[in-house]
Each structure stands twice: as structure tokens, then as C-alpha cells.
Length: 66
Image 1 (tube, rainbow, N blue to C red):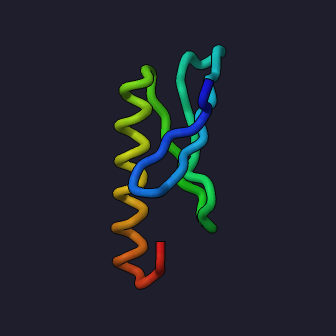
Image 2: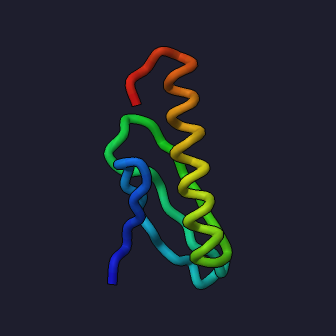
Image 3: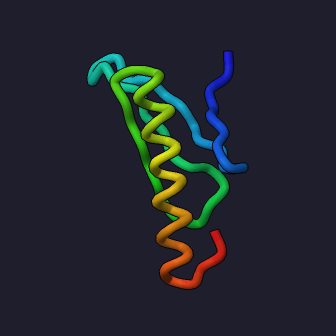
């Protein structure tokens, strides 16, 4: 079983909250805190990709290397 996702060379951790019935994670290996969540695995993958895209865009806007 794999507890990570990968998108555009970014790694996302994956956890499940039984209490909240939601998958959640964060982008690993960066100096910022970027989180994502989804009710299904498909939702989680989409949210992770969107979080990575948003992170890259934000870094570009502020002149920071992602």
C-alpha cells in the first residue's frame, strides 16, 4: 500500500480520517504548508493536482523557486 501521490515531481502525503470520512494530505518536501483533501480517492487526486498547480503559480507570482 502506498501512502503518497506524485504530480509534476511533487510528493503528497495521504492519510484518512475515519471520524471525518475524508482523505487528506500535504505537499511534502517544500518549505511551505500546502494541504488538500477529498471525500474519495479521485477527489483527493484532483485536489492534490490543484494544490500543486496553485503552489507553482503562487511561487511564480512572488518570484520564489517552487
